[in-house]
Length: 409
Image 1 (cartoon, one colour):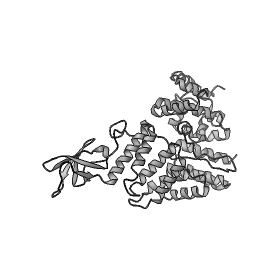
Image 2 (cartoon, one colour):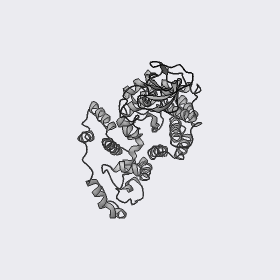
Image 3 (cartoon, one colour):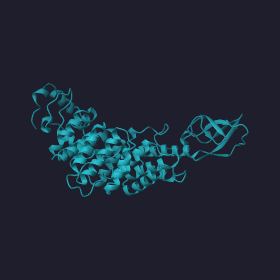
Image 4 (cartoon, helix red, strand yellow):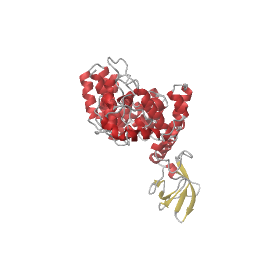
């Protein structure tokens, strides 16, 4: 590897110190680097990384570096530039000291205090379709068959990516759900016109809500108190129904807590058990969440079926808003790329609801991939350029730029 250019010489020592101070790799990652792990051990390592932020970052950085070794130089320039513009991405890529001159990627030498020069090849790993997906999700990103040119990278929304515990709020003050939310409560005490029920924040109950004839005034974790409506006949031991909307919101929080704590099957089970609780409109968001979990569990066909049900129920009360419609159609479209016409229709419909921003950029990128698969390179290029104008995340921008770069080969 050549020495850095003179322009960078004044911080080369600091950069070297940065490498020297890096902690030793987890021994499992040493074996991963040497390709010594069998599939079962690799899966176990990925599961462990979901619960350990340090291990997650180590594994991500190593995978990025390995993918870089196979990256084409044509793609390198666009990816490296995107990484140089984002400090978090930059730090991840250099986390294990995998460096060389940026000049080798065709970029002008630039100086970054206390940083190393990032290899264009390392940054290009992002073009593989977000490298952490390949490590941590059992189901690969959808692919497009019969592509007449180099295949394009598809972008998935955050909904379809596994959630790590550090990225999700803790479930109502606990690390994991202690019990499923109740759909009805029982009156356990009545004093001076105030009733206490055996359901609380775990069941989605909040202050000022009405639970039967009771207006809630105080909420605890597993109980709540409220005033009894004038003229209401209520006794200790009576049951009061928790409104479907309240109950289903609690179930959704419960499902998210299971998913964030790494219990994917428990999350899917909790969601599936509640689907009969409400109407088609009331359970729609739970179906959408279950579709995301199905995909993460490797059941892409089942996920598509659930998305189809959700889309067909968009107008059932309470009707889906623009944000829900855009997000669901983006996910459904990305998972339907085996049928280019159908995927294109879903993504175009989603665009009509999506404002400018990362989600719109993801849909435009995927429409570009469809156009490319159909042989319309001018249309594909236009979609990719539109996507880049939507302020995508740095990692997504790198993928989109790589797709566009491939068209000019």
